[in-house]
Amino acid sequence: MANNWAIIIGINQYEHHPERQLNYAVPDAQLIYEFLSTQAGFAPDQIRLCLGETEYRTSPTYPTYATLIKLLNRDLDPSRIGPVDRLWFFFAGHGVSQNGRDYLLTADSLLEDIELKIALPIDEVIASLRRHQTADIVLVLDNCRQLQGSRTLISAEVGKQTVELAQSRGITTIFACDYGQYSYELDSVKQGAFTYALVEGLKHHTLPDQLEQYLRRRVAELNQRRDQVPRIRVEPASKALQPLLPNAVTAADITVLVNRATKAELEEDFETAKQLWWEIIEAAQSRDRIREARSAIDRVDRKIARLRNNYSVGTNPPQPEQSQPLIAPLPAELTISPFISSNDDLSSERFGANYYTKLRDLLKAGNWKKADRETANRMCEVIDRQKEGWFREEDIQMFPCQDLLNIDRLWVKYSDGKFGFSVQKRIYLECGGKPDGKYPGKDIWERFGDRLGWIRNGRWIYYEDVISNTSAVTGHLPLLRVFDFVVGGSWGLFSRIEACKL
Image 1: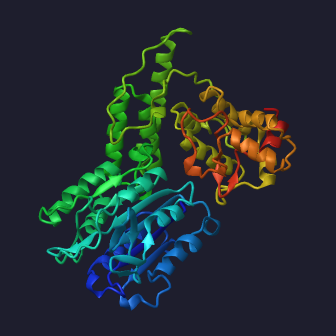
Image 2: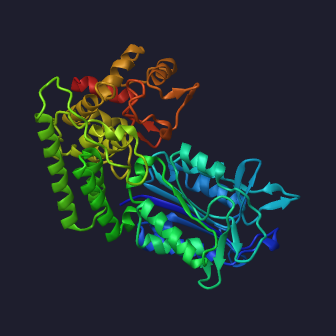
Protein backbone atom coordinates (compact mmCIF):
# COMPACT_ATOMS: atom_id res chain seq x y z
CA MET A 1 0.00 0.00 0.00
CA ALA A 2 1.27 3.46 -0.87
CA ASN A 3 2.65 5.60 1.95
CA ASN A 4 0.79 8.86 1.22
CA TRP A 5 0.75 11.90 3.53
CA ALA A 6 -0.90 15.32 3.44
CA ILE A 7 -0.98 18.59 5.35
CA ILE A 8 -4.24 20.45 4.76
CA ILE A 9 -4.65 23.99 6.09
CA GLY A 10 -7.69 26.27 5.98
CA ILE A 11 -7.73 29.57 7.89
CA ASN A 12 -10.86 31.70 8.21
CA GLN A 13 -10.00 33.73 11.31
CA TYR A 14 -6.79 35.67 11.91
CA GLU A 15 -6.31 36.41 15.61
CA HIS A 16 -4.56 39.75 15.16
CA HIS A 17 -6.37 40.84 12.01
CA PRO A 18 -10.16 40.50 12.30
CA GLU A 19 -10.46 42.70 9.20
CA ARG A 20 -8.90 39.87 7.16
CA GLN A 21 -11.43 37.17 8.01
CA LEU A 22 -12.56 34.70 5.35
CA ASN A 23 -15.71 32.61 5.14
CA TYR A 24 -14.89 29.38 3.33
CA ALA A 25 -11.21 28.50 3.76
CA VAL A 26 -12.07 26.04 6.55
CA PRO A 27 -14.85 24.31 4.53
CA ASP A 28 -12.43 24.10 1.61
CA ALA A 29 -9.81 22.34 3.73
CA GLN A 30 -12.48 19.93 4.96
CA LEU A 31 -13.55 19.23 1.37
CA ILE A 32 -9.96 18.40 0.33
CA TYR A 33 -9.55 16.17 3.39
CA GLU A 34 -12.71 14.24 2.53
CA PHE A 35 -11.61 13.70 -1.06
CA LEU A 36 -8.05 12.58 -0.27
CA SER A 37 -9.13 10.26 2.54
CA THR A 38 -12.03 8.60 0.73
CA GLN A 39 -11.07 8.60 -2.95
CA ALA A 40 -7.34 9.21 -3.39
CA GLY A 41 -5.62 6.56 -1.27
CA PHE A 42 -4.60 8.73 1.71
CA ALA A 43 -5.17 7.07 5.09
CA PRO A 44 -7.11 9.47 7.38
CA ASP A 45 -4.48 9.12 10.13
CA GLN A 46 -1.81 10.23 7.64
CA ILE A 47 -3.52 13.54 6.91
CA ARG A 48 -2.94 16.51 9.20
CA LEU A 49 -6.02 18.75 9.02
CA CYS A 50 -5.30 22.24 10.38
CA LEU A 51 -8.37 24.43 10.74
CA GLY A 52 -8.10 28.10 11.67
CA GLU A 53 -11.35 28.99 13.36
CA THR A 54 -12.29 29.75 16.96
CA GLU A 55 -13.92 26.37 17.64
CA TYR A 56 -10.69 24.56 16.72
CA ARG A 57 -8.34 26.72 18.80
CA THR A 58 -7.70 23.95 21.35
CA SER A 59 -6.89 21.41 18.62
CA PRO A 60 -3.25 20.20 18.49
CA THR A 61 -3.28 21.05 14.77
CA TYR A 62 -4.66 24.60 15.11
CA PRO A 63 -2.56 26.38 12.42
CA THR A 64 -0.31 28.75 14.32
CA TYR A 65 3.20 29.38 13.07
CA ALA A 66 4.71 27.12 15.73
CA THR A 67 2.27 24.28 15.06
CA LEU A 68 2.93 24.24 11.32
CA ILE A 69 6.70 24.38 11.79
CA LYS A 70 6.43 21.43 14.20
CA LEU A 71 4.31 19.46 11.70
CA LEU A 72 6.72 20.08 8.86
CA ASN A 73 10.00 19.61 10.64
CA ARG A 74 9.24 17.08 13.38
CA ASP A 75 5.97 15.18 13.03
CA LEU A 76 6.47 14.51 9.31
CA ASP A 77 10.23 14.07 9.48
CA PRO A 78 11.43 11.26 7.16
CA SER A 79 12.95 9.40 10.12
CA ARG A 80 9.49 9.22 11.72
CA ILE A 81 7.22 8.31 8.81
CA GLY A 82 9.58 6.49 6.44
CA PRO A 83 9.87 6.76 2.65
CA VAL A 84 6.82 8.63 1.34
CA ASP A 85 5.30 7.90 -2.06
CA ARG A 86 3.11 10.99 -2.33
CA LEU A 87 3.00 14.16 -0.25
CA TRP A 88 0.37 16.91 -0.67
CA PHE A 89 0.40 20.33 0.98
CA PHE A 90 -2.83 22.32 0.65
CA PHE A 91 -3.29 25.87 1.93
CA ALA A 92 -6.44 28.00 1.81
CA GLY A 93 -6.10 31.45 3.31
CA HIS A 94 -4.10 34.64 2.88
CA GLY A 95 -0.65 34.93 1.38
CA VAL A 96 1.72 37.85 1.07
CA SER A 97 4.93 38.65 -0.75
CA GLN A 98 7.49 40.97 0.78
CA ASN A 99 10.87 41.92 -0.69
CA GLY A 100 10.61 39.07 -3.20
CA ARG A 101 9.89 36.42 -0.56
CA ASP A 102 6.54 34.60 -0.43
CA TYR A 103 4.74 33.90 2.85
CA LEU A 104 1.62 32.12 4.09
CA LEU A 105 -0.24 33.86 6.88
CA THR A 106 -0.88 31.58 9.86
CA ALA A 107 -3.73 32.00 12.34
CA ASP A 108 -1.44 34.03 14.62
CA SER A 109 0.35 36.02 11.91
CA LEU A 110 1.04 39.64 12.76
CA LEU A 111 1.54 42.52 10.32
CA GLU A 112 2.39 45.99 11.60
CA ASP A 113 2.85 48.91 9.23
CA ILE A 114 3.22 46.44 6.35
CA GLU A 115 6.06 44.74 8.24
CA LEU A 116 5.71 41.03 8.86
CA LYS A 117 6.22 39.96 12.46
CA ILE A 118 4.94 36.37 12.19
CA ALA A 119 4.40 34.48 8.92
CA LEU A 120 5.39 31.16 7.34
CA PRO A 121 7.92 31.51 4.48
CA ILE A 122 7.03 29.30 1.54
CA ASP A 123 10.69 28.58 0.88
CA GLU A 124 10.86 26.93 4.33
CA VAL A 125 7.74 24.91 3.52
CA ILE A 126 9.30 23.70 0.27
CA ALA A 127 12.59 22.84 1.98
CA SER A 128 10.75 20.81 4.62
CA LEU A 129 8.64 18.96 2.07
CA ARG A 130 11.66 18.14 -0.07
CA ARG A 131 13.36 16.37 2.82
CA HIS A 132 11.21 13.50 1.55
CA GLN A 133 13.66 12.99 -1.26
CA THR A 134 11.86 10.31 -3.28
CA ALA A 135 8.28 11.55 -2.79
CA ASP A 136 6.06 12.97 -5.51
CA ILE A 137 5.17 16.33 -3.95
CA VAL A 138 2.22 18.55 -4.87
CA LEU A 139 1.87 22.05 -3.42
CA VAL A 140 -1.67 23.49 -3.72
CA LEU A 141 -2.02 27.20 -2.89
CA ASP A 142 -5.45 28.81 -2.74
CA ASN A 143 -4.38 32.23 -1.49
CA CYS A 144 -4.79 35.82 -2.73
CA ARG A 145 -8.32 35.13 -1.41
CA GLN A 146 -11.04 37.74 -1.61
CA LEU A 147 -14.82 37.85 -1.44
CA GLN A 148 -16.49 38.84 -4.67
CA GLY A 149 -16.66 42.61 -4.75
CA SER A 150 -13.97 42.96 -2.04
CA ARG A 151 -10.86 45.01 -2.62
CA THR A 152 -8.96 44.33 0.62
CA LEU A 153 -6.10 42.59 -1.14
CA ILE A 154 -3.19 42.01 1.21
CA SER A 155 -1.05 39.92 -1.15
CA ALA A 156 0.53 40.97 -4.40
CA GLU A 157 2.40 38.78 -6.87
CA VAL A 158 2.50 35.83 -4.48
CA GLY A 159 3.89 32.89 -6.41
CA LYS A 160 6.91 34.16 -8.35
CA GLN A 161 9.44 32.97 -5.79
CA THR A 162 7.35 29.86 -5.16
CA VAL A 163 7.37 28.89 -8.83
CA GLU A 164 11.14 29.23 -9.08
CA LEU A 165 11.78 27.25 -5.90
CA ALA A 166 9.31 24.50 -6.77
CA GLN A 167 10.85 24.12 -10.20
CA SER A 168 14.36 23.81 -8.78
CA ARG A 169 13.25 21.26 -6.18
CA GLY A 170 11.04 19.10 -8.43
CA ILE A 171 7.72 20.02 -6.80
CA THR A 172 4.45 20.27 -8.75
CA THR A 173 2.42 23.38 -7.94
CA ILE A 174 -1.29 24.09 -8.37
CA PHE A 175 -2.23 27.76 -8.00
CA ALA A 176 -5.77 29.05 -7.55
CA CYS A 177 -5.09 32.08 -9.71
CA ASP A 178 -2.47 33.85 -11.79
CA TYR A 179 -0.25 36.73 -10.64
CA GLY A 180 -2.19 39.74 -9.39
CA GLN A 181 -5.56 38.00 -9.51
CA TYR A 182 -8.05 37.25 -6.73
CA SER A 183 -9.16 33.81 -5.60
CA TYR A 184 -12.87 34.33 -5.00
CA GLU A 185 -15.16 32.87 -2.35
CA LEU A 186 -18.72 32.10 -3.38
CA ASP A 187 -21.76 32.33 -1.14
CA SER A 188 -23.70 30.34 -3.75
CA VAL A 189 -21.75 27.12 -3.04
CA LYS A 190 -20.28 28.11 0.36
CA GLN A 191 -16.79 27.26 -0.88
CA GLY A 192 -13.91 28.95 -2.61
CA ALA A 193 -14.43 28.80 -6.37
CA PHE A 194 -11.03 27.17 -6.97
CA THR A 195 -11.21 24.42 -4.33
CA TYR A 196 -14.80 23.60 -5.26
CA ALA A 197 -13.71 23.21 -8.89
CA LEU A 198 -10.52 21.32 -7.92
CA VAL A 199 -12.31 18.54 -6.06
CA GLU A 200 -14.97 18.40 -8.74
CA GLY A 201 -12.28 18.25 -11.41
CA LEU A 202 -10.22 15.51 -9.73
CA LYS A 203 -13.26 13.27 -9.91
CA HIS A 204 -13.02 13.59 -13.71
CA HIS A 205 -9.29 14.06 -14.44
CA THR A 206 -6.02 13.43 -12.61
CA LEU A 207 -3.80 14.07 -15.65
CA PRO A 208 -2.26 17.55 -15.18
CA ASP A 209 -3.16 19.13 -18.51
CA GLN A 210 -6.70 17.72 -18.50
CA LEU A 211 -7.27 18.93 -14.95
CA GLU A 212 -5.93 22.40 -15.71
CA GLN A 213 -8.26 22.76 -18.70
CA TYR A 214 -11.18 21.69 -16.52
CA LEU A 215 -10.23 24.13 -13.74
CA ARG A 216 -9.92 27.11 -16.03
CA ARG A 217 -13.28 26.46 -17.65
CA ARG A 218 -15.12 25.64 -14.43
CA VAL A 219 -13.69 28.46 -12.31
CA ALA A 220 -14.66 30.95 -15.01
CA GLU A 221 -18.23 29.58 -14.96
CA LEU A 222 -18.45 29.76 -11.16
CA ASN A 223 -17.06 33.30 -11.05
CA GLN A 224 -19.34 34.50 -13.84
CA ARG A 225 -16.32 35.29 -16.00
CA ARG A 226 -14.41 37.27 -13.38
CA ASP A 227 -10.66 36.97 -13.88
CA GLN A 228 -9.30 33.98 -11.98
CA VAL A 229 -7.13 31.62 -13.98
CA PRO A 230 -5.79 28.54 -12.14
CA ARG A 231 -2.36 27.25 -13.11
CA ILE A 232 -0.66 23.88 -12.82
CA ARG A 233 3.11 23.57 -13.16
CA VAL A 234 4.40 20.00 -13.33
CA GLU A 235 7.92 19.38 -12.07
CA PRO A 236 9.95 17.69 -13.33
CA ALA A 237 8.57 17.90 -16.87
CA SER A 238 8.90 14.13 -17.32
CA LYS A 239 5.94 13.73 -14.92
CA ALA A 240 3.62 15.63 -17.24
CA LEU A 241 2.39 12.28 -18.61
CA GLN A 242 1.65 10.86 -15.15
CA PRO A 243 -1.56 11.11 -13.08
CA LEU A 244 -1.36 13.41 -10.07
CA LEU A 245 -3.23 10.86 -7.93
CA PRO A 246 -2.77 7.26 -9.15
CA ASN A 247 -5.38 5.95 -6.70
CA ALA A 248 -7.99 8.34 -8.09
CA VAL A 249 -7.36 7.73 -11.79
CA THR A 250 -10.59 7.88 -13.78
CA ALA A 251 -11.79 6.06 -16.88
CA ALA A 252 -11.37 9.35 -18.76
CA ASP A 253 -7.71 9.47 -17.68
CA ILE A 254 -7.08 5.95 -18.94
CA THR A 255 -8.75 6.75 -22.26
CA VAL A 256 -6.51 9.80 -22.71
CA LEU A 257 -3.39 7.76 -21.89
CA VAL A 258 -4.40 5.01 -24.33
CA ASN A 259 -5.02 7.55 -27.10
CA ARG A 260 -1.67 9.21 -26.47
CA ALA A 261 0.19 5.91 -26.36
CA THR A 262 -1.45 4.83 -29.61
CA LYS A 263 -0.62 8.15 -31.26
CA ALA A 264 3.02 7.97 -30.13
CA GLU A 265 3.30 4.42 -31.46
CA LEU A 266 1.83 5.39 -34.85
CA GLU A 267 4.37 8.21 -35.06
CA GLU A 268 7.13 5.73 -34.17
CA ASP A 269 7.95 7.57 -30.96
CA PHE A 270 8.35 4.18 -29.35
CA GLU A 271 9.94 5.17 -26.05
CA THR A 272 7.16 7.65 -25.25
CA ALA A 273 4.59 5.02 -26.25
CA LYS A 274 6.10 2.48 -23.86
CA GLN A 275 6.29 5.01 -21.05
CA LEU A 276 2.59 5.73 -21.50
CA TRP A 277 1.65 2.05 -21.62
CA TRP A 278 3.57 1.51 -18.37
CA GLU A 279 1.62 4.37 -16.80
CA ILE A 280 -1.59 2.61 -17.87
CA ILE A 281 -0.45 -0.65 -16.24
CA GLU A 282 0.29 1.16 -12.98
CA ALA A 283 -2.96 3.15 -12.97
CA ALA A 284 -5.59 0.92 -14.56
CA GLN A 285 -7.89 -1.20 -12.42
CA SER A 286 -9.36 -3.08 -15.35
CA ARG A 287 -7.64 -6.37 -16.14
CA ASP A 288 -8.58 -5.91 -19.77
CA ARG A 289 -6.76 -2.55 -19.89
CA ILE A 290 -3.69 -4.07 -18.22
CA ARG A 291 -3.65 -6.94 -20.72
CA GLU A 292 -4.05 -4.42 -23.54
CA ALA A 293 -1.09 -2.41 -22.23
CA ARG A 294 1.17 -5.44 -21.83
CA SER A 295 0.26 -6.60 -25.32
CA ALA A 296 1.04 -3.12 -26.65
CA ILE A 297 4.48 -3.09 -24.96
CA ASP A 298 5.28 -6.47 -26.55
CA ARG A 299 4.08 -5.12 -29.91
CA VAL A 300 6.26 -2.03 -29.62
CA ASP A 301 9.26 -4.18 -28.70
CA ARG A 302 8.69 -6.27 -31.83
CA LYS A 303 8.53 -3.12 -33.95
CA ILE A 304 11.80 -1.91 -32.45
CA ALA A 305 13.38 -5.29 -33.15
CA ARG A 306 12.18 -5.25 -36.79
CA LEU A 307 13.53 -1.76 -37.31
CA ARG A 308 16.84 -2.78 -35.79
CA ASN A 309 17.09 -5.86 -37.99
CA ASN A 310 16.52 -3.77 -41.10
CA TYR A 311 19.96 -2.23 -40.68
CA SER A 312 23.30 -3.91 -40.73
CA VAL A 313 25.96 -3.26 -38.14
CA GLY A 314 27.64 0.07 -38.77
CA THR A 315 24.72 1.57 -40.65
CA ASN A 316 23.29 4.80 -39.31
CA PRO A 317 19.52 4.24 -39.28
CA PRO A 318 17.18 7.19 -39.70
CA GLN A 319 15.81 8.42 -36.39
CA PRO A 320 12.05 8.09 -35.90
CA GLU A 321 10.26 11.38 -36.29
CA GLN A 322 9.35 12.71 -32.85
CA SER A 323 5.78 13.62 -32.15
CA GLN A 324 4.78 17.04 -30.88
CA PRO A 325 4.81 17.30 -27.08
CA LEU A 326 1.59 15.94 -25.61
CA ILE A 327 1.55 18.16 -22.53
CA ALA A 328 4.93 19.72 -21.93
CA PRO A 329 8.32 19.17 -23.61
CA LEU A 330 9.88 15.94 -22.40
CA PRO A 331 13.55 15.80 -21.41
CA ALA A 332 15.93 14.98 -24.23
CA GLU A 333 16.93 11.74 -22.52
CA LEU A 334 13.45 10.32 -23.18
CA THR A 335 13.96 10.42 -26.94
CA ILE A 336 17.10 8.33 -27.42
CA SER A 337 17.37 5.95 -30.33
CA PRO A 338 15.53 2.64 -29.83
CA PHE A 339 18.01 0.66 -31.93
CA ILE A 340 19.61 -1.22 -29.03
CA SER A 341 20.03 -4.97 -28.68
CA SER A 342 17.31 -6.55 -26.56
CA ASN A 343 19.26 -9.72 -25.67
CA ASP A 344 19.17 -8.97 -21.98
CA ASP A 345 18.94 -11.31 -19.03
CA LEU A 346 15.97 -9.89 -17.11
CA SER A 347 15.64 -12.75 -14.66
CA SER A 348 15.67 -12.80 -10.88
CA GLU A 349 16.88 -15.71 -8.80
CA ARG A 350 13.74 -15.44 -6.69
CA PHE A 351 11.08 -14.22 -9.12
CA GLY A 352 12.15 -15.85 -12.37
CA ALA A 353 12.21 -14.56 -15.95
CA ASN A 354 11.42 -11.00 -17.07
CA TYR A 355 11.48 -9.58 -13.55
CA TYR A 356 13.60 -6.60 -14.64
CA THR A 357 11.67 -5.77 -17.83
CA LYS A 358 10.47 -2.41 -16.59
CA LEU A 359 13.96 -1.46 -15.41
CA ARG A 360 15.30 -2.36 -18.86
CA ASP A 361 12.66 -0.21 -20.54
CA LEU A 362 13.35 2.80 -18.32
CA LEU A 363 17.07 2.53 -18.96
CA LYS A 364 16.53 2.19 -22.70
CA ALA A 365 14.42 5.33 -22.60
CA GLY A 366 17.17 7.17 -20.74
CA ASN A 367 14.80 7.82 -17.84
CA TRP A 368 17.68 7.49 -15.39
CA LYS A 369 16.13 8.80 -12.18
CA LYS A 370 12.98 6.72 -12.53
CA ALA A 371 15.21 3.73 -13.31
CA ASP A 372 17.12 4.48 -10.12
CA ARG A 373 13.92 4.31 -8.07
CA GLU A 374 12.76 1.18 -9.93
CA THR A 375 16.09 -0.47 -9.09
CA ALA A 376 15.68 0.36 -5.40
CA ASN A 377 12.09 -0.95 -5.38
CA ARG A 378 13.02 -4.23 -7.05
CA MET A 379 16.04 -4.76 -4.81
CA CYS A 380 13.88 -4.20 -1.71
CA GLU A 381 11.35 -6.71 -3.02
CA VAL A 382 14.01 -9.34 -3.71
CA ILE A 383 15.11 -9.27 -0.07
CA ASP A 384 11.64 -8.75 1.47
CA ARG A 385 12.37 -5.19 2.56
CA GLN A 386 9.72 -3.40 0.47
CA LYS A 387 7.73 -2.47 3.58
CA GLU A 388 10.76 -0.92 5.28
CA GLY A 389 12.04 0.59 2.03
CA TRP A 390 15.71 0.36 3.00
CA PHE A 391 18.55 -2.14 3.35
CA ARG A 392 20.52 -3.40 6.30
CA GLU A 393 24.18 -4.38 5.97
CA GLU A 394 23.30 -8.06 6.32
CA ASP A 395 20.73 -7.70 3.50
CA ILE A 396 23.38 -6.42 1.12
CA GLN A 397 25.74 -9.27 1.95
CA MET A 398 23.01 -11.82 1.16
CA PHE A 399 21.72 -10.14 -2.01
CA PRO A 400 21.54 -12.73 -4.86
CA CYS A 401 24.51 -12.52 -7.20
CA GLN A 402 22.35 -13.30 -10.24
CA ASP A 403 20.14 -10.28 -9.55
CA LEU A 404 23.08 -8.00 -8.79
CA LEU A 405 24.81 -9.07 -12.01
CA ASN A 406 21.72 -8.55 -14.18
CA ILE A 407 20.95 -5.14 -12.66
CA ASP A 408 24.52 -4.00 -13.17
CA ARG A 409 24.67 -5.28 -16.76
CA LEU A 410 21.51 -3.35 -17.65
CA TRP A 411 22.84 -0.10 -16.17
CA VAL A 412 26.26 -0.47 -17.82
CA LYS A 413 24.84 -1.47 -21.20
CA TYR A 414 22.21 1.25 -21.64
CA SER A 415 24.46 4.01 -20.31
CA ASP A 416 27.29 2.94 -22.65
CA GLY A 417 29.47 2.13 -19.66
CA LYS A 418 28.83 5.39 -17.81
CA PHE A 419 26.62 4.15 -14.95
CA GLY A 420 26.45 0.98 -12.87
CA PHE A 421 27.58 -0.61 -9.60
CA SER A 422 30.69 -2.10 -11.19
CA VAL A 423 31.61 1.32 -12.59
CA GLN A 424 31.30 2.81 -9.11
CA LYS A 425 33.39 0.02 -7.61
CA ARG A 426 36.21 0.73 -10.08
CA ILE A 427 36.20 4.41 -9.12
CA TYR A 428 36.05 3.50 -5.43
CA LEU A 429 39.21 1.41 -5.80
CA GLU A 430 40.90 4.23 -7.70
CA CYS A 431 40.12 6.53 -4.74
CA GLY A 432 41.95 4.16 -2.38
CA GLY A 433 38.95 2.19 -1.08
CA LYS A 434 39.04 -1.54 -0.44
CA PRO A 435 36.13 -3.94 -1.11
CA ASP A 436 36.20 -5.34 2.41
CA GLY A 437 32.86 -3.97 3.61
CA LYS A 438 34.51 -1.57 6.05
CA TYR A 439 34.20 2.21 6.20
CA PRO A 440 37.21 3.54 4.26
CA GLY A 441 37.61 6.72 6.28
CA LYS A 442 36.40 10.29 5.71
CA ASP A 443 39.11 11.29 3.21
CA ILE A 444 38.60 8.36 0.84
CA TRP A 445 34.81 8.49 1.12
CA GLU A 446 34.67 12.21 0.32
CA ARG A 447 37.16 11.75 -2.53
CA PHE A 448 34.85 9.06 -3.92
CA GLY A 449 31.74 11.27 -3.47
CA ASP A 450 33.50 14.12 -5.26
CA ARG A 451 34.50 11.88 -8.20
CA LEU A 452 30.87 10.75 -8.62
CA GLY A 453 29.42 14.26 -8.45
CA TRP A 454 27.69 13.58 -5.13
CA ILE A 455 29.62 16.40 -3.48
CA ARG A 456 29.29 19.90 -4.90
CA ASN A 457 30.88 23.00 -3.47
CA GLY A 458 32.06 20.96 -0.52
CA ARG A 459 28.60 19.64 0.42
CA TRP A 460 26.76 16.37 -0.23
CA ILE A 461 23.89 16.96 -2.66
CA TYR A 462 20.18 16.34 -2.07
CA TYR A 463 18.58 13.46 -3.95
CA GLU A 464 16.56 15.86 -6.12
CA ASP A 465 19.85 17.41 -7.28
CA VAL A 466 20.95 14.14 -8.87
CA ILE A 467 21.75 14.74 -12.54
CA SER A 468 19.37 12.57 -14.52
CA ASN A 469 20.96 12.76 -17.95
CA THR A 470 24.19 11.65 -19.57
CA SER A 471 25.90 14.96 -18.82
CA ALA A 472 26.49 13.50 -15.35
CA VAL A 473 29.99 12.33 -14.51
CA THR A 474 30.88 8.66 -14.84
CA GLY A 475 29.49 6.60 -11.97
CA HIS A 476 26.92 9.20 -10.87
CA LEU A 477 24.14 6.58 -10.93
CA PRO A 478 22.64 4.41 -9.58
CA LEU A 479 22.39 6.20 -6.26
CA LEU A 480 19.38 4.37 -4.77
CA ARG A 481 18.89 6.72 -1.87
CA VAL A 482 16.40 5.33 0.65
CA PHE A 483 16.12 7.28 3.90
CA ASP A 484 19.65 8.64 4.32
CA PHE A 485 21.33 5.42 3.23
CA VAL A 486 23.14 5.67 -0.10
CA VAL A 487 23.05 2.14 -1.46
CA GLY A 488 24.74 2.99 -4.75
CA GLY A 489 27.79 4.21 -2.89
CA SER A 490 27.77 1.68 -0.07
CA TRP A 491 31.12 0.24 0.88
CA GLY A 492 29.12 -2.85 1.91
CA LEU A 493 27.74 -3.17 -1.61
CA PHE A 494 31.26 -3.06 -3.05
CA SER A 495 32.27 -6.05 -0.94
CA ARG A 496 29.21 -7.94 -2.24
CA ILE A 497 30.16 -7.01 -5.81
CA GLU A 498 33.64 -8.41 -5.12
CA ALA A 499 32.14 -11.64 -3.76
CA CYS A 500 29.85 -11.97 -6.79
CA LYS A 501 32.80 -11.30 -9.13
CA LEU A 502 31.13 -8.56 -11.15
